[in-house]
Image (cartoon, rainbow, N blue to C red; front, side, top):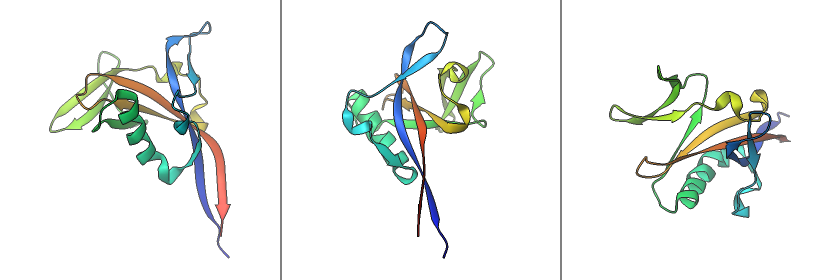
Length: 130
């Protein structure tokens, strides 16, 4: 019998203010629907919905920040919007108060690409099932 595995995550809002230790802390979302543990398969759709709710408009985007995310010469992260368009956001990855091996970082962007928000997805473990 082969077991299947699925990672689970909980989303957190990344603070816009540095704490006393020089880190950006995490907080629960005011909309409690986004404070639940979700399966990895639900992560993409949940981030799209969260972006729409956070910015009050549909058509918002989200980007995962990975080792492959390009960095501009000015120290900002470059998010590929397609059609040779890029969005530069402040690189705060090293200052977000998360364990890199147990989390994934995302940037939510409003539909007009004029506002953005950082979100952390912290691992809540793995579910094994047959």
